[in-house]
Length: 326
Image 1 (cartoon, helix red, strand yellow):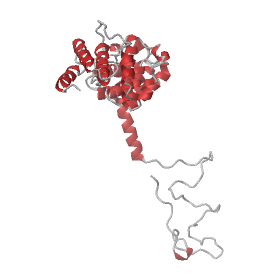
Image 2 (cartoon, helix red, strand yellow):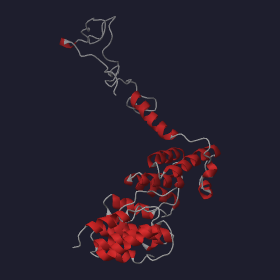
Image 3 (spheres, helix red, strand yellow):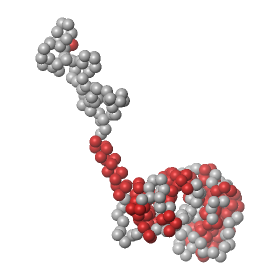
Image 4 (cartoon, helix red, strand yellow):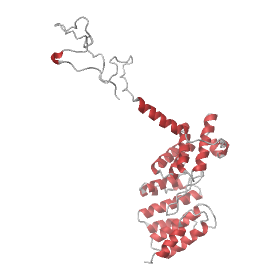
């Protein structure tokens, strides 16, 4: 699935992999004198038994004919209590909402399951063929729309989840699309579910960034462990460093943020998507650390490699030009 746009000011969001009642009341009140008016109107006999033609106001076992909540008084044969009456309109509303999620947005006829990455299709092999085809097509749409229309992409991912909730790949898609929508808590929940299913930490940078967005920088920093880094490729480790450095800055640890980013390949000649984000994050950290001239230099270095305008480095430089030096 495609990575999210709208970067954060410290370098942008980490890139993804590419592509998660009551019933009627039972009786009327008794009239004065204690006589029950529910029957034919005949008075009770002195021996306490109902008069002929009248209705008894109690069964022989002493239990009322009907319960006040409108449910039958007779116990179930298995001895269990009857469930409370359900609100039919509420049930229909819940069913309609769930059905809308299951249906998902429309999928163009020319979108095929074969458009999904080969390895992703393999992750769906445990599903029945027709079901796997539908899930794959929703995932294709999620990947196509995540950059330009993340909300619709998320609805496609949710439709896939409604059909294959125990598939790690689907939960990853839900997490990534929720992340693109800025739904941090939901994204984190989906990533955690995917991690339990797959055992991997591929999305650790995005999970850490969710923690940071939820104002929990300490939990974001906790992702920076040898165990987690050992499961990430080079690009993933750089993304994690960018997020952790941002969390350090959130805690006022500006020099620590600078030192962490200096362990990454700032001078690379590569053109990976992470290069402008890394340089931008470093420039921002230098500025927070009071090293203005160096920060300006690295904002310029960011502009030099940011042909897609994934950062606002040019705007930051204009702001710094207008701002008098301390």
